[in-house]
Length: 250
Image (tube, rainbow, N blue to C red; front, side, top):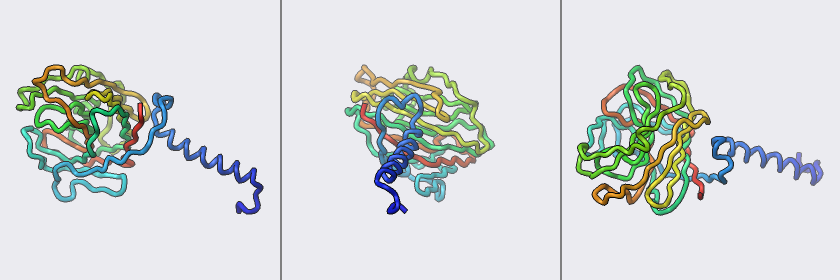
């Protein structure tokens, strides 16, 4: 087909195709972030967190289906249900922005609260620097703590996260799809800011600053987690399709 076209037309067709590809990639970035620079694909090398009951996590390419599993992690925590994946280590000393994107759908009759995204540092107790919870009222909430790493009684809430109010829609548990995007901007000094988008609209933002008191657990690494983590066992199906992570140099 191209053999019968002039060089000018061939060049123009190539430019149009290239623009379309760039446009599709750019459209994945929330409008608020389009002026910040180029985002590049990042492979977190997802793995199953601790292990799950047989068949609790099903994967096909970038699509995951999470269902009920016992918590097989060895920890001092009180959460009994876990069906999660986690990514490779992120350097706390390197400034870098990350954007997690997925289309999420929950089917459940229970209003159980659960965590669906985390920025963890490997601590043995208390909330990690960031937990994004789908709460029982079907709104999103941040959870974030400082930890003495001695047990749940030694946790201090990070109010710059926990006091943030969600401004998005009331989420449904009937299989309705929502585009979830979580942007985490690491500052290279063990701290970060985060912004959550639902269907391209900013719904909440918060900050984690490293503790100044040397008694508290100091983060030496970070990694992303995604799935369903809850205090109690409950029946659900949580589909997460098109899971991707991009990153950007600040």
